[in-house]
Image (cartoon, rainbow, N blue to C red; front, top):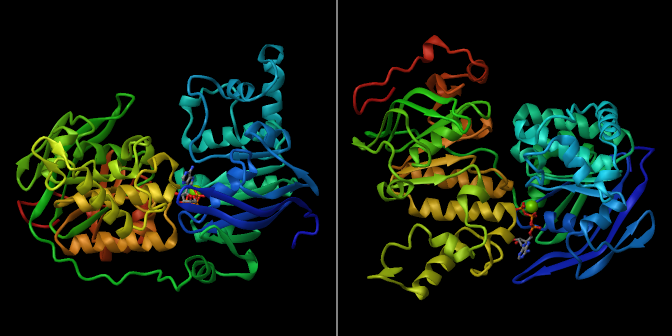
Length: 520
Ligand SMILES: Nc1ncnc2c1ncn2[C@@H]1O[C@H](COP(=O)(O)OP(=O)(O)OP(=O)(O)O)[C@@H](O)[C@H]1O
Ligand SMILES: [Mg+2]
C-alpha cells in the first residue's frame, strides 16, 4: 500500500462463480483498501462485473469468502451489502425518471418513507454535495438530468446510505471526455475522505490517470496487480491480452469510388421536438470511412437514426446509390443494405430476452438457407449462429444464452457480428468499440478497415477522437445539428477539430456538396 492512511477494508478470498458454459470467476483473491482507487481491468468476459456483483450482494459465489474488516460476511442481496457499507453503480442506472433526486434517494432507503423528513434529506444531500465537490440539485427531476448528472445521483444515493466501498462499473463509457475528467476528481475526493473506490474500465488512459492500484483479470483468474505508478499502458495491455497489443493500424490509402450514401439538406427533430439536424448535406463514397466528431448530443444519434429509418426526416433527402430512400422503414433500410451498429446496445441493438442465436440471425432469417418457403430451418439457423459465435469469439459460446446475461463487451460483439455480416454496402457505426477491451477494439477497427477495402461506405460516429483520427479518411464535425466542416484527415489538426466541436465553423473546411460522384 502506498498511501500511509490506507487500510484493508475488504478481502475477497478464492471467489469462484460459474455460469452455464463459463467459469466467470476462478478462485480470485483481492484486497480492497480505504483511501485508494483500485482499477479492475480485463478483456471482455474476464469476470470483472461478476466479481463485483458478488461483492455487492447480487450473486452468491459458488466458492470462496468475503472478509469485511477482518470478519467473515455473507450478503444475500444488494441491500445486505449496502447495509454493510458496500454499494455499486451499475452500467444501467436504476433511477425513476419522473421523480426528483431527493425522492429517488428516499426510495432507496429501507425505512418507512413517510417518516422521513424531506427537508432534512435535502440538506444532507447538499452537505454531501459540498463535501465531495459533486454538484447535485436535490429538487431536479431525473429526466431533466444529463447522463453524467444521473450518474452523480447514483453515487450520491450510495454515499447517503453510508457506503464506504463504492464500485463503479465502466462509469465513463457513457460520459463525455469532460464529464469523465469531472468524475475522476469526485472519485479522488472520495478516496481522500477515506472511501475505498473500485472502477472497472477498458480505457488504459483512465487506469493510468484515475487509479492508485490496478488488478488484471483474465478468463476469470487474477493475473496480476500493480501500483499504477509502477506500470505502463503497454505492460497493462500485454498482461491483459497475453500478447503485445499494437496501438496503431496500418492504413492503406483511400481510393474512394462513387458516392453511395448521400444526404441533401436533411432536417430532423429530437425527442423533445426541437431541431436536431439542420440542413445536413454530405456524402460517403464507396470504400471510404467518414468519421463524425462532436460533443455528445449535437445530432450524432439523430443522424444515425434518420439513415437507418428509425427517425423521421422532416425536410431534405437521403439517397443510396442515387435512389431516394428518405423515410424508409427500418426493415426497408435493412433490405437496401444499411447496417446500423447503434450506440444503445440494450435498447435498440438487441432483443435482451432472446437467445444469442436469435439475436444473431435477426437480419439473416428472411433469406436462404435459413428460410425455405415459409419455414425457418432451425438447423441452418444454429449452424449460422455457431459460426458467428466462433468468428467473433462470443462467450459463453452457448447459443441458447439470453443476450441480456452476456457481459457488456460480449453484447457488443453480438451486434457487430450480426451487422457486419449483414452489411451490403453501408455501415452506420455508432461508438462501435464502446465497452470493448483493447484487443477487441483493435479487431473491430481492423474489421471496419477490411470492410472499407471491400468497398463498403462507413459512417463512423464516435466521441473518441483517437478512434476517429485512427480510422477515418475524412472527418466531419457536428455542432448543434449543423456541419461545422468536413476535411481530409491528413489536412486537419486536433486543435481545428476542437474549435469546430466548440461551435466555430472554419472557412477552409467549408463543405459544398459536389456534383455527383466527386469527393468533397
Ligand atoms: N448471468 C449470466 N449467465 C450466463 N453467463 C453469464 C452471466 N453473467 C455473465 N456471464 C458470462 O460470464 C463471463 C464473465 O462475465 P462478466 O460480465 O463478469 O465479464 P466482464 O469482465 O465484466 O466483461 P465486459 O468487459 O465485457 O463487461 C462472460 O463470458 C459473460 O458473458
Ligand atoms: Mg462487465
